[in-house]
Each structure stands twice: as C-alpha cells, then as structure tokens.
Length: 235
Image 1 (cartoon, rainbow, N blue to C red):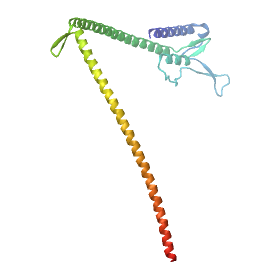
Image 2: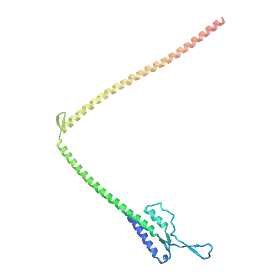
Image 3: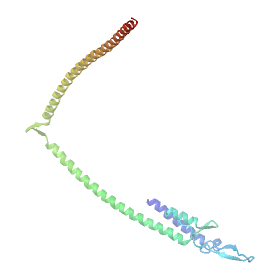
Image 4: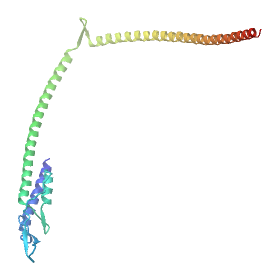
C-alpha cells in the first residue's frame, strides 16, 4: 500500500515538473494554457480571423474518480506542444489534492491498523500467559492425581487399569458367546425357513396340478353329457 502511494506521488510530482518545463520552454511561450488561439475564418471578410479560446466551458466530465482515472483524464484533456503536455493548473491542483487526501486517508487507516495490531498483540500475549498458567495447574493436578477413587474405593492407576481391562475382556468374551449362539440360531431359522419355502412350493405345484386335473375331468364330463344329450335328441 505504501509503495503504491509512493509511486503515485512520484508520478504526480514528475508530471507537475513536466508542466512547469513546458510552460517555460521558448517554443511553447507563444501558446497559452488558458488562451489557446485557433484561427477561424470570419464570414464576409477576407483574411480576417476571430479568436476562439480553449477556455470555453468543458462539457466532458470525468466518470472515474480514482487517482489513475483523474490522471488519465487530465492527460486526455491537455494539449501537446513540442512533445510537452500543457496542463491546466486547476486540473493539476485537483489531482494533487486527491493525492494528498488519499495519502492522508491511507495514513489514518495505517495508524488504525497499527493500533489494532498492537491491541491484538497484547491480547495474544495475555491469552498465552493464561494458557501457560492453566497448563502449569493441569500438570500439578496430574502429578497429584496418582490415585483413583471408584465406588468409594481408592485404587492406584495400575490396579485401576487392570480391573477395567479385565471387565472389558469378560464383556468381550460374553459378547462373542452371545454372537456365536445367535449365529447358530440364525442359521437354524434360515434352514427352517428354507424347508417351509420348499414345502410351500411343492404344495403350490400340487395345487396347480390338481386344478388342471379337475378342469380336464370337468371338460371330459361335459363332453360325455353333450354326447348323452345328442343321443337323446336323436332318439
């Protein structure tokens, strides 16, 4: 940020010096920034001219108010004579004011940032001190806590760990036994289910076969009845 502002200031100062050199150049002394004369032929009078100045009202407005935008606008609205830019002092003063205002604002923002950084540094130091104190207290508590009380009984850490792991081992063995029995029961249930499915499928097949036989017998019976009826009709 500071380097950017420093470079901007150098550019503006160089531009200001170029404008001064252009105004004191002998070849440019006949050209005025405020009164740039353009010959315009006057109607009805041969060889006569009227003076039109460049100090007329500038209808072009700058839409980019950044430092670069103001600088480019000033260059675009300035005339070039013998390789030098004839810069309007009012525009140059306006750009310089923008630069100084920007420097002042950035300086204030930088001071605020430094103040916030210092405050945060103090806060971090305070927090680090508190953390160190808590770590020291925790270490003291860990050293003192050599015994563990369980159900009103005090145990050393070694005995406590042995009891806990023994309980965990017993529970794990019991769980494995339950899982083993459950697996056998599940397999038996699957076997019974398979047997039921087989019997059910056989029953369905028998039922379908029986229905087909009944329909076949019904058709044969109907044929016999038709024959009997036909014989009676002839008799």
